[in-house]
Amino acid sequence: MSKSKKRSEADPSFEPQTNQCLDLNQALIKQPHSTFYFGVTGDQMTDAGINPEDLLVVERTGEAQHGDIVIVCVGEELSVKRYEVSDDGEVWFASANPCYLPMNAAECGAFVWGKVTFSIQAHSGSRWLVGSDESAEIASADEWPDIIDDEEEVH
Image (cartoon, rainbow, N blue to C red):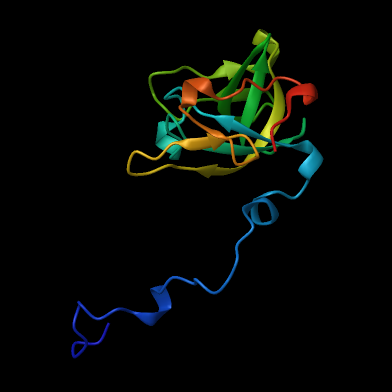
């Protein structure tokens, strides 16, 4: 910003684009039939910027690379973790919160259910809409559907 420009003047590069439509499904979803939404309820990934009541966009895949944020399946439980591969090739699932210990995939039988492609945060007390029609109800994170298999997908 130049010294002659007052701070109160609006910078045109940050003006809202009200004349353009943004389809979030098109912008966020590459594979519609294998993409799911998850509501975050725990604090295991707060140091990665993923907080309770965030909404995750997850692509169903069993593949991940070191550093990816993934949905991990352990038994019937799903959890958000960072996928890590040690120097000796062991796969670990780590939280982004020092209060939680990493899990060794082989020892606990955990596997990658899907890869997180986006996380979306609600602000100012906003809550997510669940449903796809005009009668959709407002839901808090504890009311979001549990998604474990393809039969219950939410688009």
